[in-house]
Image (cartoon, rainbow, N blue to C red; front, side, top):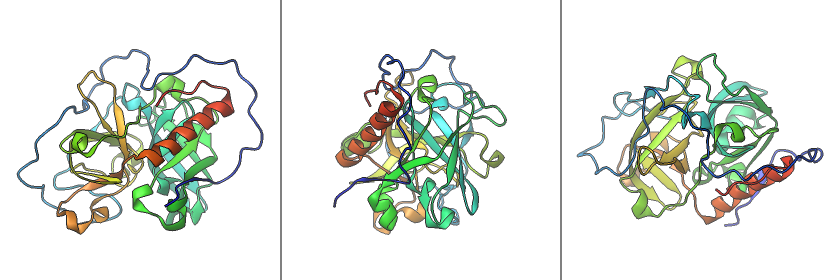
Length: 303
């Protein structure tokens, strides 16, 4: 299967040349105080004896059993500030989503946050990005974008394994927030690993505040990760990240996109899930980041 990038529109003209900036290392951020509230989980954890009780299934995403999400009281701290609240604007109204900075001017999110017949009748018209938002606080302002990319197999058939997209920003927001390194990990390095999902759910403060939950990866397939982590509509596009230790940098291993309805019955688990990265997807993600840096005259990070 050929995999390639599809965009909603071309950029009208090259951006004015800028003075070259020093290379941005993936995950590099200004020193910050330890975040209040939840702390990202790290390491591995053996499987639980059994899954939590299954709730009635509604919508694309699922709270499994008791809701274990925790409010992030200051999303302007690290690593939460690398995560963005998205207003997805189209002819049918405003929808909510989550994204994360993979490059200075590239926000990665779920494919259905930029192109989805049910939401937009096709492509979103524009998306407003707010990194580190907490309620009415916008520590890095709001950036409006009108250029998006996703994968051909998502546009052609909403292939769940490739529900992946990018928002191309008109300015280098990621130079102020830091970015998530991206890694392709082997199955053995993923099974049992504790991973984090944090985003902006519509059932909590109208998607204005970030909520976090962490748990182990229960199962993997060649292009998906499955985990017992609570999510609700609005958290699609959130980073699924691992940390080797509490003081280690966060490393993104997937893009949260689905709840229990998206988990194949033959896995015999109750789980939410994310597309994971393979060589083809990593190449496209890196191309998106590099192209955005070239457009703005920025040095591309190593992701």
